[in-house]
Image (cartoon, rainbow, N blue to C red; front, side):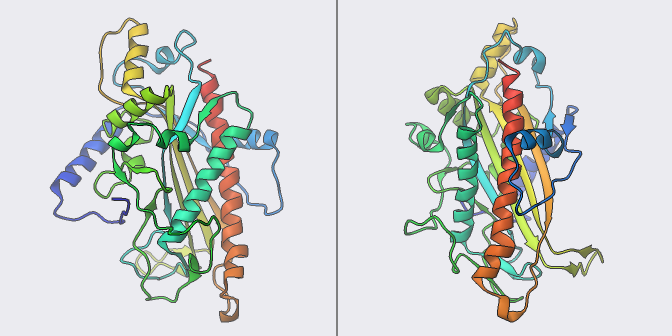
Length: 350
């Protein structure tokens, strides 16, 4: 698979049933949320210190948790239990400038499949490097090592590779101005090269596996790979980035400013085999066959941007300065704040 579209086929009864079932499961227990009360302000020349990011993270990033179907989080992750120390990113997806019907409308600047993949890989690199450099005492397992696990390729499908020659930077063929009404890509979810597509039908894996809930989706994938690599927990991430020029919605009449919108979501998942071990240590012999979410995280950010420009400015250089630079700067700050929250919560199990 590897290519996803932002609509659901009307005659797909199985898919509709799965979405309804997922919604019922998600709403069956109350969610406890903390943080997320403050907005991030984009400052192009501000390089935030680790201390400042740590301080901001408590307000910018929202943390959520929900009690599991069996047991209590306080007991399952107490100091008497095995601490979470060894982790790795096992699912990494992105929705970048999704389009409906493949037509350019108010978005102005678009990416090809190659551009979306390259930008997704830059996002993944931010997470990988941050986990390694933010002095957190965790044993972080790289995605390169995870992808080499013998049973990794037994699950999901090979992700399409849109990059035919090695390169790391985006070029004019990857991101460009496109006049309204012109055809553009339908691809909305892209994974880094070599990662597995763990989605279901047209639904990204994160929407089924992530969030403060327990999940049946790909539970054997998570459990088997975690066992092979001796992971205490796995991180899954969804990055959503889009931008729009100023316009009035023809249906709602709502006015939209020129801006870049970010939504970053991550979850710390514990495989069902480890869930069973933790239950057993509390004296509970039940064996729920679900992946357990320790905590999940989310943050949404809106950054003012200059999307509408004169014809003479519709160049790759303008895209770099007005879109790519703010995207990468904001994404790095937001990711590092989220990682700091994740690490802080993981350390509570030590």
